[in-house]
Length: 260
Image (cartoon, rainbow, N blue to C red; front, side, top):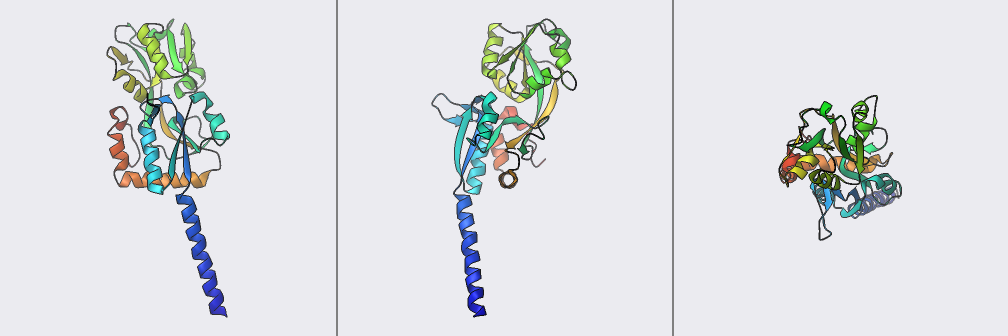
């Protein structure tokens, strides 16, 4: 009798584990990201999604046996989308610094720096030269937060501007810079490099606004999902996938920090 009971318990355990594994492998991972934040994430003209974060998220799903589902949104709607359950995470060049307690964070996967972009013939050479100038920035970004913070950020610098224009996307801000509607853009260096790769005559000032790291923001308490994604990221570093994807994006590659 004891032997029969033992066999039944073992069988139940095996079936249970198999069921959990099957359920986990079949899950859909909803990747929430900024619909216009190249080279990390963006929508192409044909409606497809691309960018470093998109490719890395797809690779994580492939490794874990999950189905990938893109959830693009306007950046200022990111928290509403996450809290509503429309996506599982915010993964789109998302700054950890200053938000440490607001999300359940993955490992940092990229370093970054906030810079000022100007036209080469603008005559603007230092941060001090921005006094009386119109500066653009994307809403709800690390650069925006820095310029709003008078204690630890660059709020005192922003107070010298004639105006701080806040944009929905950096693509729109860059178009205004090219048109002469603004004098400069406060932007992360990797996104700025991407925009400048398609247009000549622009540069960064030598002085940085701040430095940061990018990570994946999950809902607070969602440690199980976070840990599985971290495990997959480590595996992708070891098997070379992380590096291979990074090589497609020269603006980002030298800032990648996992496994280094």
